[in-house]
Image (tube, rainbow, N blue to C red; front, side):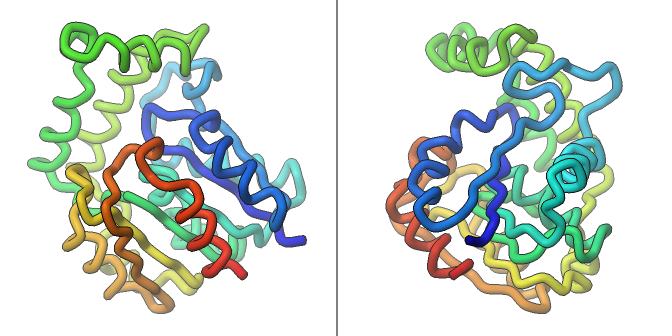
Length: 228
């Protein structure tokens, strides 16, 4: 049975991918992990970064002898998977991303980071604040947001996956995005697809950005279709 690693998004945790993992367990040996500072893991002193999260994945692969594993990455998880494919060839195999942001500029990073203001979240969407508190307990969810905002600003200054980076990735990759995603555009996803050597493109109808809003049955079908 093929091995499949599921990677969560920014300010998320592996718990969000458990419903998908349960659906996929009939067909794959599924693994999940939490990035540093997420899902209750200790928040590191140094800045969150794609490099840090890539190290998390590479350590997990080495520890569990999973070199060549297939990867599904939601949002930032997909970005991390592609970063590994570009910088550490052979460590992972096929990659399927959903709702991964590629268009990191100073302007877009400012826009994204403004959404991570904990005070505004507490005031405007207290239920989401409580979800974040529970998701990252016993660590401080506000610190997770602050460090993620800092990382996004850094990505705006230094996008790790420019077109030239995508064009040297040898892995088979399918990039996907919801047609009503307000955080990741179809245009940036199509652009990424066009620069991949072995890329495929999937636009998922009637689908928004949050992983909880994506049909688990539809995603299971698409993942099985791509990975086989």
